[in-house]
Length: 89
Image (cartoon, rainbow, N blue to C red):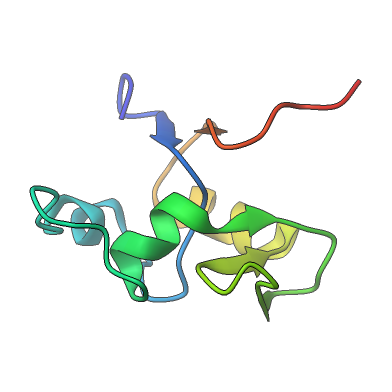
């Protein structure tokens, strides 16, 4: 979290997480699980879907703009920065 305004994640969001405090409670010193919130933060992807959709990858979720905006509103964020994919221009 940068300046309490920018959330940096590898993948994306999780339907199991609504607040930043929930992210803070995740034990990160472990093998990456195949499912659950920790897995989702690493492998979820933004997509043109209404809410949540099963990821074809088999790990994480696909999440839409409504999910993103709601999470940002709840947590008073200005930006979510993800590292898993490049932005195509």
